[in-house]
Image (cartoon, rainbow, N blue to C red; front, side):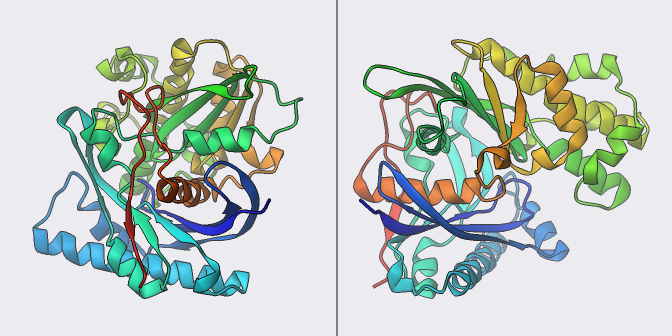
Length: 368
């Protein structure tokens, strides 16, 4: 049985651009994938967008950014349709994550900007957005939301990809989904949480010292030496003592502790911090992961990938090696979550966000 076509949109905490992806699915199963694309933000817009992080800026300024952000997402949708040779009427729904500018679930607050009603009008397609608020209002962390999609993908993997399985997304913040062995009903157990910083501290360091948005190829870190005392201090952050599930705001960690280091040593130490924080995730797993599958921009950093291989006692590989599109995965996930939202099915769970019971989420905006 074939599903419906849906588009997912993602603009992550790295704020490097819009990812858009097509999937064919229903609310429970994934049947196929269409094309995907990324449309980068120019430096000026990225700077204006990230200046709103923490909810900073006047209401008028944030509204102005939200309008431009929404229009850029609409452009990505239309370009994707053109690439796929499809019409708006071919698409059941768009999952519009928006841009997180504030996330403090312990305060019962999360804020993703993006105008769902306007996006529906501009694209002529029904839109679901605001995926996190319902979970946070019910006492959950509001993140991560991708685990149920990871599980749907993992259920289609060949048996030689042994479980338990860890799917690690290294974006601005890193998060992991632990997928347990299938039980007699065919439903695997699920656990997910943020592990700590992903690329954010490394990116900010490279931007500040070299004027580049990333440490391309891990070149700076490769030339540096890890300061073990600084690393130990960074790992003493109280977040790591919290029980899972747990989540973070992008700006929960700061690079000031490495400011006295050289550019190269700072990059090496921050890269080691991301890897060491991820390795600490295993302390929360019900059983050791037999495989680690890596998605997100961090998998393109060879120094970070090598550090993970050294610290994790299991095979580590990019998801592209098993046929998943590591650059489109999060966008694909929000297409799937939109279909689940429209069907009224859960998108978050007690073991993924800490919410008391499985929760649906999202707001539907009709194109008509």
